[in-house]
Length: 336
Image (cartoon, rainbow, N blue to C red; front, side, top):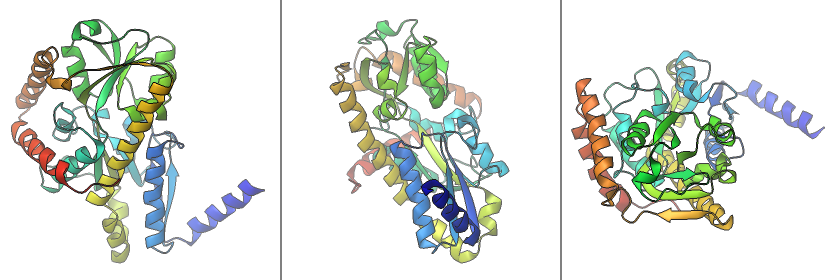
């Protein structure tokens, strides 16, 4: 009876609304990031006094993780949260924030990428959708099953899931064998032995239950993923001006920082869970600046930026601005 009543209430809410938005993403419904995105929807509903209704579709219900962005462009979804790097070579400028040495925390990274976007540093990468806000997770680390990774030599030939081409270049430069998988596919691949480990922030180790499988962790801060929340252009353009304003008021840096803050909170929980489970955690002193790791990482970064140059993209201005913002964003008041 409860579920029937809840379903009827939801249906009536949708019928009463002027605008119904289907919000697609890939995080599990119970994850902290999913709940944070849901709070965005509830906020929009409240601010519009119910004139906008947001229906969440987590766990790839509406579109597979690599297809979320396109699902918004084509109108399968009205709003979507996606990873730019899941569609290789489509957002090369945005993906530069993935490089090591730029992002340390989710809030800092979210501040960096949102400001880069607002300053027009990403050219026309998002012309086919209406951008609401961007964010990043915090530092991404290496998590393995059975074998501890303490030096680059330990990665030689090890099958490690890479989230994007950028992270893959870094892993390849360190001697690993990168395997491209979307986040929801990791658990099955690792449990079957298809991969020996993953590169993830601590948050994802709980959200995708990887702490159940990986018992060795190497904290190094190898990369950070970028995310974007977009709305279908036609849907946004068709809204009355006052509803457009509500959407705009709930976009930009405020929500970028909220999602970044959520990642930072959840990173602490993921790390604590691994400690409570008695896992082996190796902390690389100095992170990517460690003298044993830095030469190979620098070579991989140079290889990647050179490949962009061959495509006519000069990465240097974006990287330099990102590093400058890194300092500025670190000093900003942050959300606890």
